[in-house]
Structures are given as structure tokens and as C-alpha cells.
Image (cartoon, rainbow, N blue to C red; front, side, top):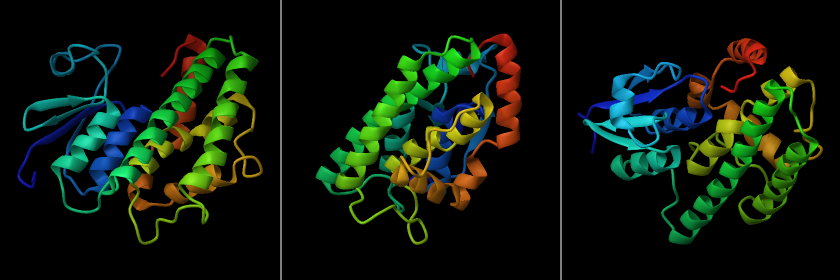
Amino acid sequence: MGEESSVKLHGTWVSPYVLRAKLALKIKGIEFEFIEEDLANKSELLLQNNPVQKKVPVLVHNGLPIVESTIILEYIDETWTQPPHLLPKDPYLRAKHRFWVAYLNQVSELLGKIVEEELQGKATEKTMNELWKKLDVAEELMKAEMFPNGCPCFQDVKPGYLDIVLYSFLGTIDVVEEFFGYKSFNTERYPLLVSWTKALSQVPDVKDAAPPKPKLLELLHGMRHKGTRY
């Protein structure tokens, strides 16, 4: 399904949530039009397609809008049913992937909060410790539950739902740490998460969709002066 369909994605290049939708479309091999939005001056089309939240990403398929990044990922997988599949077919494995995605969304929100606090000069050790504790849990339990034989490899398989969500925020954590001058996300503490993220960063579709590091650093420098979050 969807071979002759119209697919448009409203988003911003810097958003990790938009990156999720981009990656899913690329991994599934779906042609789409990307519409870059200025969130300081939102287009009428964006407001029409997402009148409740007025946020990106918004996927518009044959004129029908779908919002929320994880919902968009599942919609893509259910609509374009050809492989590669983003979610496992086994119901139990699918449930486990959804659970860990929900958990990683909490981690992503904490990372966004830290960036915001740092940009405003209000960084707190409490928020930072919350982030590392959640990553500690992910490292230990995801390794035991999801990857008992080691880090996933993408030489013969495409990234899926869980991979996309993980990379969407951990894929740029090195840029954030370089900008703010700390380094806590390292192989010694997080061997699985770091190796997993690095493996994903070598996938051609991921390389093609990921925001450029120099552009991210430039944006962070500009936002530091304004004290705002991207």
C-alpha cells in the first residue's frame, strides 16, 4: 500500500522527534516531501493539520494528518506492510519494544530539560542525576532483556522502532556534551548504549537523516545567547 500515495512530513531539521519520522520513512523506502517549519512563525498548514498541539512532526498521508512521533512510526509500519518491519510481529516482543520506547521517551524529556536548563544558566545536579539513573536502568535491563548476546548489529538488518527512538536523542548527545563541557555518556559506564548508538550512526539511512554536528553546535551557540531551547 502507499506506492502511489502522497506523503508529506512537516518538521524542523533539529527536532529529535521529527528525526524519528524521517528515519522510519527512509528505512521503509517511502518517498516523501519534507516541509521545513519555522516554529517561531508556524505555517497555517501546520496549524490546520495539528490544531490541538500545534507541534511537529506531522505526517500527512493522502491529505490525512497523523501526529505524535511514536504514533507516526506505528502508522508507517502498519500502512506500508512490506519489509523491513519496524516492530516485531510477535505480540510479546512488540509489547516489550513499546514499553522500552515509553521509557526512553522519559529519558529524552530529561535530556531536553537539561539542555534547556543549561542554556538558561539554571542547570541542576538533580536533573542530571535523574538522567544518569534512568540511563543506568536502561543499560542494565535492556542488555539483559533485549540483547543478552551483546550489542545489536545492522550489517544485515535495518533499524527498527526501538532503534529509531534510541538514536533520535542519544545520536546527538556527544554534541550536547561537547558544547556544555562534560562527558558522562561513555563506554565504561554504558557499553551497550554507546555501542548501540555508534552502530546506528554507521547505517546509511541514519547518516543521511541525522542533523550535521557543526550546524547543531552553531544553533546551540546562538540559543545560549537567547537562553532558549531548540
